[in-house]
Amino acid sequence: MGLGFCPGKACVASTYRLDKTASQLFKVAIHELGHTQGLKHCTVKYCFMQDAKGGNPTNTETDFCPRCKAVLVSKGWVF
Image 1 (cartoon, rainbow, N blue to C red):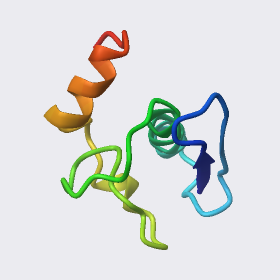
Image 2: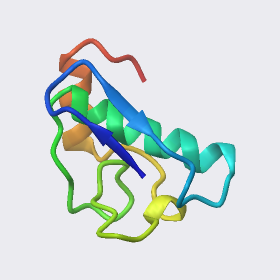
Image 3: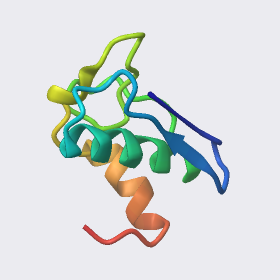
Image 4: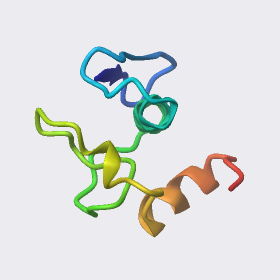
């Protein structure tokens, strides 16, 4: 659904495997932006950084988990 350099300055998000809703594209994009900030895949079920493992987990993602959010806040992200 996407690819982000980890860490890096570039990422892409695709709608090809999505249900074509804006919220799913947002979640893929925010996941890939997380990779550009150095975040790896997360095991927390609701975290935007969970691994899709060939599926589409966007319906279960609701936020960054506290650990992932702390990394992003340390890099200047404001929630």
